[in-house]
Length: 330
Image (cartoon, rainbow, N blue to C red; front, side, top):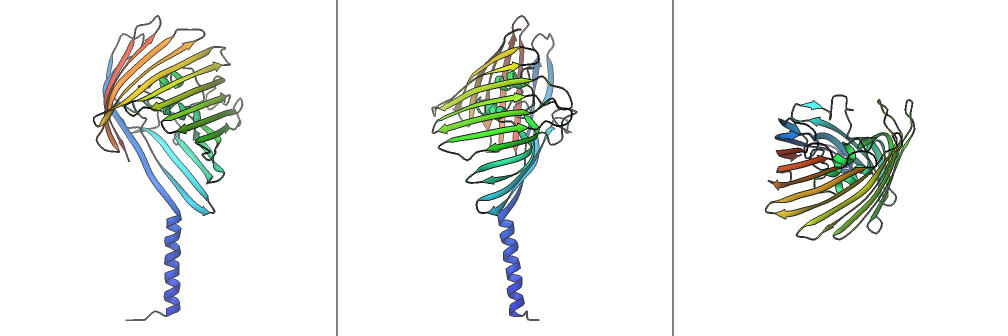
C-alpha cells in the first residue's frame, strides 16, 4: 500500500474541510404546491352550472427553487425562482400568456442588521396583506378578499411586479416596514410604488398597505391607487380576521370600498373557515360574497378541503360554487 506524505495528506484534508464549509454556507431548496379539486360553479348572472376538475381553487399550484449563501458578517445572498402551473392540465402559468416565472424571480442581499433588498419580479406586499388577514389565504376561488381586490376589475398591477425593487426592514419591536417600487421602462406609463407596515405581538397581528399603480405591461392597465388596513386576533378557540380598504381608479374615475370579516375555528384535525366580504363601488352594483368550508390536514404537507361560496351582485341572479380538493406541499 502506497503511503501518502504527511504534507499531502494535510492538504487533502484541508481541501475537504473547505469544501464541507462551503456547502454548509450555501443551500438550494426545491419546493412547490399542487392543488386540484372537483366541483361545480355558477357565475353571478349566469343560468348555467359547470362541473369540472380545477386547479388552484384554494392555492394556485406552483413550483420553484430558492437558495442562499452566507457571505459572512451577518450578510447573505439569496435568490428565488417560482413558476405557476395548472395541475389539472399540466400547462404552465395561471393562463396561456402568463410569464413563466410569474410568482417570483428575484436575487438580493439580506443583512441581520439592515434588512433585505431583492431585485426582479417580487410578490407585492399588498397581495401578502390581503392573503394574510383572511381565513382562506390566497384562494382566488373562494376568498372574498382576494376575489374582490384581484378578480373583480378593481385593483390593477397583478399580484407580482416585474422590474421591481423591494426593501424589507429588520423586525423592530414586532414591526416590519416594506418599501416597494417597479421601474418605468420602455412602453410603460410610469412607475409603481408601494408601502407596507406590519406589526404583531402575541395573539394580535395588524398591517397597513398602500400602493400606486401606473406601470403598464404588455397590455395597458388603468392607473389605480389603493390602501388596506387589516388585523387578526387569535383567541385560541378561534381566530378572527378583519379587513377594510379602498381602490381609486384614476383612469375611469370610479372608486371601490372593500370590506371583509372572517374566522377560522380549530376542529378535529382541521379548521372550519368562514368569511364574508363586500365590494361597494361609487358607481355600479354592490357585490356580497360569503364562503365557508372545512380544511382537514392529513399531515403537515397534505390537506383535504370542502368549501362552498355564495356570490351576489345587486340586480343579478346569485352565483354559487363548491369544491372538494386536495393540496400537497413539497
